[in-house]
Image (cartoon, rainbow, N blue to C red; front, side, top):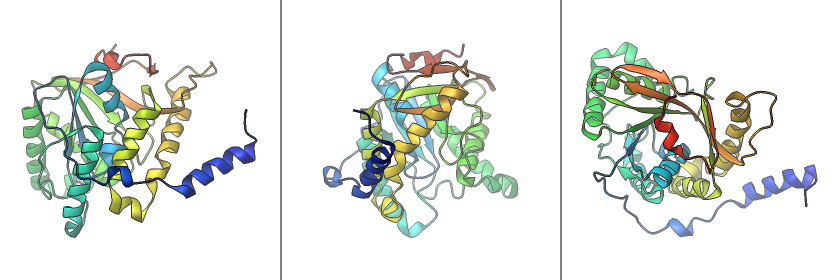
Length: 284
């Protein structure tokens, strides 16, 4: 039976206040090893926790096309004193997601703020070369990273670091999957539906970042964020003034084909759970 507006809002408030049990993720876990399995989805993460916040499309690619997932962390936060804790939490989160973790020692990339690209070009070039060497080694078919205006200087910096690294690989092609978190992407071309199990897995991974969610319980707002992306996506990606897809959870993306130094935006797609994400390989 449909709820009254007050009951509907109250149920959200009560769920938030009750919080989430963490007992199921107490034991130490290890991420899966990286193998030769293809296709490979590589996620370039500005911070520990980003691998969880935008993991939906990666989880669907693993489920639907047998993709292997790997996280490439660019930083472990700005405070070196917390790096051991955050490294442990990241390891546990990747294990929850079933995502391999590329070995990037804390501090390898230093600051990845976009200002570094302008003010310290020589250092930025070293970071670009390091990331380029990782991508040349892995050669993923799908490359996930934030869009160019994602609202946080490290997220924006990550976008341009990846694009600079790709420019060093003239013989490489892949599918770029641009994600959003801090700021909405104004020009998404793909909305994918996420199941309750996909969102549960993302949330289980996020709960591993104990230190961060103790400071700010943003994990409790993740489902609402994925509902908000559906609200925008059905209008921005779908045809306006037409019946909309009634997804509960979804993820907005900007998918582009990258080939030999050039990018080609994909056609607009709304992809429910019954639409195979194998179509993400097709830029048409």
